[in-house]
Length: 267
Length: 307
Picture 1 (cartoon, rainbow over the protein chains, first blue to last red):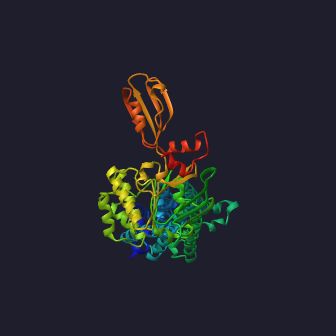
Picture 2: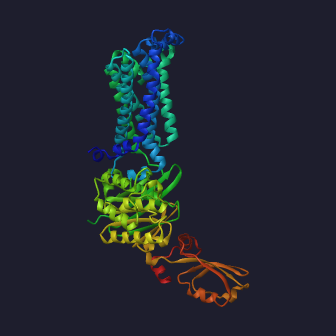
Picture 3: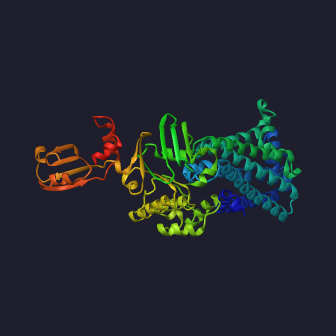
């Protein structure tokens, strides 16, 4: 049974069950508000006019050049903005609580006094994060698909699935980064600020980088490029991108184990 | 097996400049109840957290049953730990939370948990968040005892417990000892450990200042008397064991070492309005032995004599 094999992950998810429910509800509402907007403005100039207000290269990165198509619209507004921001907030919060939050609350002392290695704690917490992020991005994917089908929009289910999968991997990677920073520092506020800062930098590198000659080309290094760079809703899964996102999670989790095993637990 | 339960050599812990523990040497034998006394901030919790690998020593070594705590989580399955500042996840029912801890240990018979909870008067169906401090402490005690560990490491275990539950707890400690288990118990109050401990160590400012049998510790009490009329020092005489006398008019303060009988009889010659005698005070004990003018610390044998 899962609860016996991974008791910490099972408890973490069980404890988060209500919060996960509210997040899923919020995400479905966001999808429900955004998808119908497209059918309202479909075949008008409103969306293209909005997109043209942006500089050309930014328009391209953010997928605004395709905003007049259903797939392009869903990619840029939902996967590229609203649901993305919400899921990243969820994941970074979850990752921050995993170690730093519990350490500050003082509950980590008794937990680690049990025959639980620090490695195992990190692994189980990242596993719980991955399950949570996957559940929420599935809620996004299923509701996007449902509304698109209901409104008769021209979007492929495989594209939505590809983007949802990539989003769950991106969110897990960002949350695991928070776990790693927490493993090193153990202060909740600092962990939250540093992780959010790093994620915003990565986003800016991807979104604005192409227009800044000094960092031109570096946008390929941003996890956001691995996530949306190949326009998954339009073109389907981007295997190298998915692999890079998964590897980023593994790298952050490994760093978390090494950093956490070396240091004292604060009271 | 002739291994020591706990063996520390030159154990030192620095917290970025502030010294938590300074070259501590200590041996706890298997099967004994070892009281670890000292004022707050003396290094008791630091030592305990080093035993559990929550902290890593700056210098020196510590071995528990011959094993380095940092060598892996296996050792901790033989230890039951009650933190000094117990923080519990409040969102659970008591039974649910204890069930989680039991799973981390690969399972504990539910009957044993129920039995311990019953003895301590702990309701397993209550929400942890809604418990009083004393009841939370009971949850921690059950979590420490439920897997019948070879070594119990208890940091200020009786804090928040009412006197009746304290007695139950002390009985549990004795039973653990009688079953051959080792108990390492910290406290800042002497009374708390004197009922159960075979030996006590006293720490101060991160250093071990003495280890001895409890029977050899001298009992110093501080007292304060108010008389109805001013009394002179000559009228009082020199009751046995009394020291540090401060007389101002009708008020008298001082300390008494050992029995208070002689002091009470001397006071009784005057009209006493109020009399307060504090319990033996650990701090007092250090001060007398290590900071009082005169010869260097007395040995245990000499102390025995004094008593």
